[in-house]
Length: 595
Ligand SMILES: Cc1cc2nc3c(=O)[nH]c(=O)nc-3n(C[C@H](O)[C@H](O)[C@H](O)COP(=O)(O)OP(=O)(O)OC[C@H]3O[C@@H](n4cnc5c(N)ncnc54)[C@H](O)[C@@H]3O)c2cc1C
Image: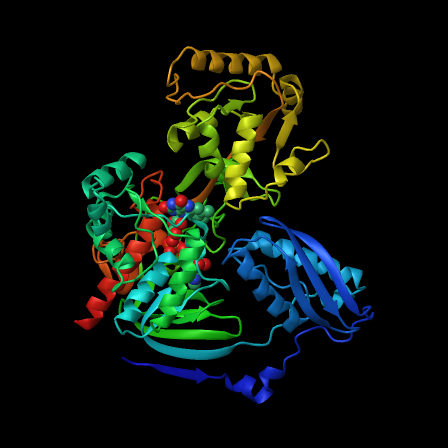
């Protein structure tokens, strides 16, 4: 194993003494009034309250006094920003990719506090002045690009096998989109499923994946997935393997862990570092280093250092391209809101051009129904509320007051139904409203008292959530014909009262919609977070060029690979693909390097 880190400070900068570069604009015009100022910004999950302490000339302390941001994402972004704000003495530091809504709300709160202090914004609101970068060369066995689920799994596996692994992540936080997902994993054909007696097979799962993706999947990639799924799931959960704390309970086809995707990622990060991998955050891979057609490393840019990372193998695990507005078609951008990770810019797609790398199914993205808009403007999936409410009598209606139907059908059916209409509302009576909100607040998506704020008469922001003491009052607020809404409710109730257990849309029937108000309507939308196309690989996880040949030294795992999914993904299957393909990349690369 080689471990050699060479620091090459550029001569010019050494002579100039680059460490003494000024970090702020000198000489503020006005003095601040010393003290501690409190301010509030809007985060992803509600208010962020900050205390900012200043002297006449400097920001000395920034504290988050109250916030409910997501563990490992928004919660982890604020300390990063505080460090930068104190270092550069300005509120105007970069937003943290992957936690942009929290970052923007937090930055606004600090700005407001500084305004209260009478800060001169030509100094305390200036862009940070960063010094020139140094140059550094790192030699390692394996460099992994992207510290999300697939990348950290690959790095963890390889580091545990004793290899010298460097993993670079362009954002300040690890986890990527994997930290934003539910975190459940399919365990089809695994030891756990066998022990629990759950009947499933990779053949059946393959059929479900292909059917969900309208057979647009690449069959060879699906077969590859099916070939390693059980073995790699077994490794991930085994005490003498990855020992990830999944729950071995229930008899379903998926296994979950406390703390969702973000909890999984924080645990994985700890295990990966304990195994000996070296992590560089805020370090973006810019290009592949190619020699005689083989990939022998990457060039990367950090905040203060440019790196040349020489390696025997490179694993691309950069996630998707959903955040790249040059790749995602204009029609998607206008119809759907992006709810994915802001690091998903498709960087690897550009990087593989150096080796004539092949791709497929670009620019497909996975569209997801059941979304509401949060006050921050971010779309949020509502399944945890929707599932509860759907067992009751909430229905989906359109702008004409007609039932959309397909409320419990698969995403594809509802997507098609929604595409035919301009607007869509969840129509709820009091009981449905209570159940929906408790499902959402119970999972920490919003606070229990938020819906009362949003449905108040004077509320004008997002979400568009309206209350009417009568159906007529609600109809007027959402601009839907009241008679049509009444007719829709009457028809639904008549079907329930007829004793039918399922209606014309396949919706199980339990209870009627209340005859009297209040009634509520929540506007629903379609979002996308995950891309479906990507790099072509062979069954050794190696990147293929357009001639179908494997590129020596270059491997890929996770969402950056195209073809495991078709035009829609099966729930839990992309997260499982990320985790198990990451292990697979670790396995094949360490095997190849051991030859
Ligand atoms: C909100 C949300 C909910 C989801 N829910 C589900 C679900 O319920 N079930 C399911 O199966 N799937 C779900 N998914 C999809 C699934 O989580 C992802 O497909 C999967 O986790 C992606 O893993 P990954 O390792 O490929 O990418 P990521 O976990 O995103 O990791 C990629 C990392 O690479 C970094 N990176 C990118 N470019 C560079 C570069 N040039 N240099 C260095 N680093 C770089 C990124 O910043 C990122 O951190 C969801 C996704 C989102 C966003």
